[in-house]
Image (cartoon, rainbow, N blue to C red; front, side, top):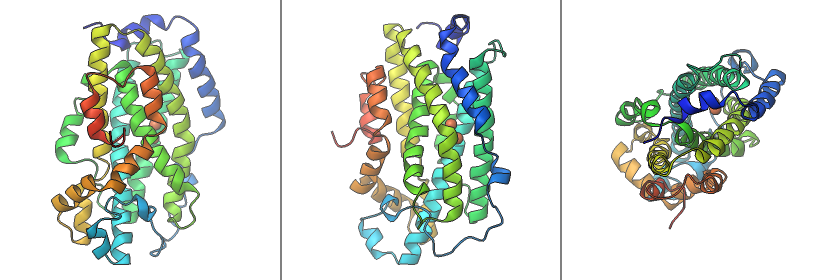
Length: 309
Ligand SMILES: [Fe+2]
Ligand SMILES: [Fe+2]
């Protein structure tokens, strides 16, 4: 296997054009960044009748279980699922911060790339605080991923590097972004949820640009053997990320056995289609970049990101 991409990029960073994107993104973040601690009205009362996610995005929408639920139970499940997605996003942000800090550990800290990496870590720190505070305000358990996945996540920054790491980061960021954009302008959604989404959308756009640049440049440097490994680990990680966004414990909030709820959600064509739709922007990019292919296809199919194929 060839040397980790992060090591090679360190020496390559002496070249100028690798920093062009980072320079542009640094200027953008200097102009517009948010502090959720002051930019969100945390004292505003929640509206008990407002939904937290559109009904058609709730994982059980359209199932027999859904048909048997009262309107109050549907709203409650939507709230718990919104908080599950937020805390799984938080979990992945923490893994992303680990990866970024490892990548720039040995780099010249004055370079635009290192400066932007530190800016992104600072953004993600604030986002994670924001998601945690939203969930606490909602009065919902900070679910995060299932325990087995949380344990597996400890290996993320060990096994994922270079384009594979940035590709799975893009899957997480862009899937979440698509869901948040749909909700940001929907007046039927709880105002706190909309404020959180708006801030996240604005700052994530820069992270997505940075990660896309890292993927495009990184793939071109991989040997054939390293590309095969990176495709496999990226597909494996992405499958667990998208299948983890709803912690099965959410179903207990409306009296449904978590195992029964999870099975119903995974079998639900609406839920599968939601994941495909949420990945509709990122999957063509990763395919064009060469990250989607053998030997990772079994995991990509299991992720639902490719749709029914
Ligand atoms: Fe974030
Ligand atoms: Fe991000």
